[in-house]
Image (cartoon, rainbow, N blue to C red; front, top):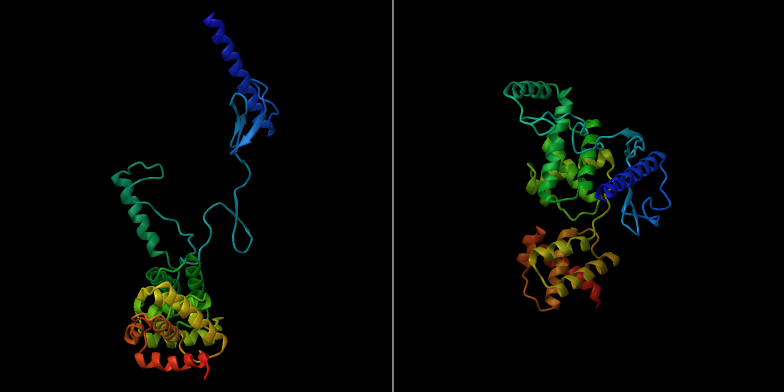
Length: 318
């Protein structure tokens, strides 16, 4: 009796396997379960019988080409997408050190051979001095953006802008660090990111005056589409650094918005004007906040804060 049961089970298994294999080859899903003739349901990529739970088909292999599309909508064969944050667009081959692709330990002879290959690859990595300058500049751009904790999309734009500046021969007479910092600041301006010249110069290897001069050169030559920065963009940053209550922050934001709509803040430094709005809001809510504290955060002096307060008083009327 047990032999009969085992024989029947083997025959049933072979029948089920044959049915599933033929179904996979034909690319068609069976309508009923090959064991109990129950209903087949597709759940999470698997075809399962609702009655007995038999998995009839699972995660079919796509034998078609694995194409990827880049920004130019051209087909590429596998591999990672091109990136502007590397001087070679991320297409350079990386040579390993201690283990192979399967994770096995390399022999001493093989490690010595890979070391020589890495040395030759490093020597031939740059075709010209311009490529070497490009790699240095993009590395500096990535370092500054990392210190400022900015997004990946902004990093791509800053690196692309540095490539454009080099192709237009704007690096002549300028240091690579100054142009790299200027492209970071320009990318922040184009994306309305509240970062000042002082914020970028703090993490760059240049001073604020040199950075401003280089940015003016890039803006004049490349016609950078940088929109004007409204004071309301700097209010959250100042409020966060000073740790003020929400009521003060909301009032300061409303003051900055009203001043922009009434053209009261025209011609003023938006960062300093946002500090004045924050000080006025703190006074309205009887919150203890001095002009010197705001000046340290907004990178300005108390006299500038007081001069902007006179402009804010114009909103109240006579």
